[in-house]
Length: 402
Image 1 (cartoon, rainbow, N blue to C red):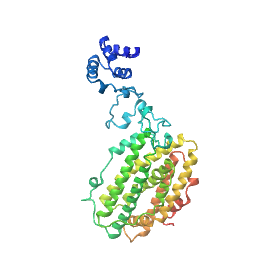
Image 2: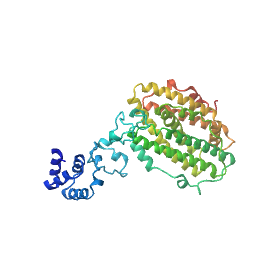
Image 3: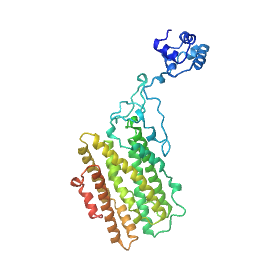
Image 4: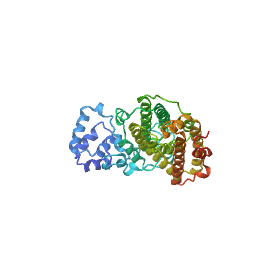
């Protein structure tokens, strides 16, 4: 077998002499394999050792090809650690940080890699457009989630942070814990459902969503423990109409609008007011940690919504339609799930003797939630007030309305 002139030139450039080249030409290796060895920058001493092994065991070695050397991926990059170590933003460099608007591969090809056509098999992905899932800076949100991870079993003061409460206050807090534990379990299932459809090229999004599933697990675990740690016990389950809005979303963005925009906006606003109804050191710490996680989820929802509006045709029409559906489900949930709002009234009133104070505080919470939600949409260019669900407005005026 005669090596092609191009392969000979590469070999000679590496310092292979004529005798070494002749031994390779006499070996059972294919020309393609030898060309790949030269692309590995095999120095003469290594090339001599390798050809000796081939000559000693030709049957075992002749099938080698080293095709992986001929990748079209960018080479020579060196990621430099940042202030928080070697994070995902630090490795999103060169072509490895360029996420195309449309992902071209249907299999598990990672971003920056290229499949071998000879072994290409399509997978189950069906979200290939970047606009459907992307959010600017999602890699930073992932790193933030990893750095801020916490453990409910050890990061909450279970031994010292709980004190005996009047029966109605303890039972009310356990009712709130039951509701949010239920919300967390549904968040886990809904978000995990979307892992498989999202193409591998959008791995940064999949990584972040993995942290949100983990955070939702915190919510299930920590609130369930809170309900069982101080003599109260679990309360009544939420109605779940809100969940059906999430489950019924036919597009990823619709689900995110319902969960990570509308619901998380209301959740963040509630957790920000937790100081007005949390009665123990542990409860205050619990809501503080939950608030940190929920703000991050809301930030992803906001950034994805902004990206979608900027990159998807007819986006404003779709967004307003989906928000309308989500608001309808949310308003029904808030109106008809009596356990949560009555528990909040008891906690805000600090007991059963000043219920009017609790109702007024709940009204302030609902007004804050609505204002914060509308302001969030204003910040991305959506004037939602003209089309806002009437039930949402009614709840802000009268939190006991049904």
